[in-house]
Image (cartoon, each protein chain N blue to C red):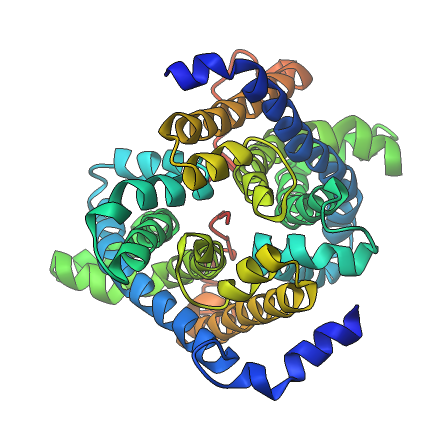
Length: 220
Length: 244
């Protein structure tokens, strides 16, 4: 415990780096997954291709993907961009399916009513379909967030620093305090991401406030 | 850069001996097989039981919550704590194997549970009505119907184990991860990236193999290749979320 008290400043700055390395890919991944998922939802024949393709990306182990990123991007191995890009790929792999499921979960009659009211194309998507898909998309985003926070710590092995540094240092120099700080820090950050996503999803879907949370798409 | 990686992969010196690619690949496959057998022996019966009886659902929730613990932290903590208590090779391999088993359990448990849970109650009732005993219902109705989700849990666990076994080279485990960890330590990018390519290839091959297996063993009544006259409801393919 004293180790943690003595190193609060270090832990804090590593936690901020960790949040950035895990959080930015979450936003980038969502931005890319929304149109991809919409395409797969709209043109059903694309769905198997899009889902299988992104699924295959997710099979590549994190340490291998971090190491191979410089080959694809032409960056140096220590560049944090490698980690952000790799995490974005993982996020997209998880979220495209979620976006498809979310858009599929929109009740057909609601969609038909929107169409009958004269809402077409983008206005129906942004005004009706997407808001109604938020609960499912948020559930997928929570899975991706927890997964990202855990995976990012592996980046310490290639020398990109964040909370994982505490784990590596704690192990190499046999400092249980550092190891615990790293584990607790990762857990706290995952919890924080989870809460933020739930709060934002709640705020974006005020009509659900009084009802029970949506069961559809909850993490398995 | 690419040419040096290619040269590393093609160098005959890397294809024989204790640090050769065949040996490392065999080690990696060996750990993966041991871990999957141990984890499946624990998690699958448990998941089927929880799904079949509806009891002890907290197990599933607890296992899922435990996934938030960073893999790297779990690996280091157990190695640091258990390593000194063991001697010889076991000091390096035993903590890693235990962590890998712990990591493989949640997706296996969730897959088996979700599969049985998703069985249409009408199908279960029909089986009972036909005079099947509880064990028969589980074996002849619930298990076959649960198979797609159960296998998606196996796939998640398998990929997780292959990925984490790579990282476990950091705490002294053998396998393909050695090239990545040793290459990084000596600044040999060709070896590091060559190893990374091998690991990625192994993961992809395992994924495709399991997809083929799923296709082969899942009943045609579930995959939509066969539809009953009354249009049997076919559950969609759902994946069990996993991380590495």
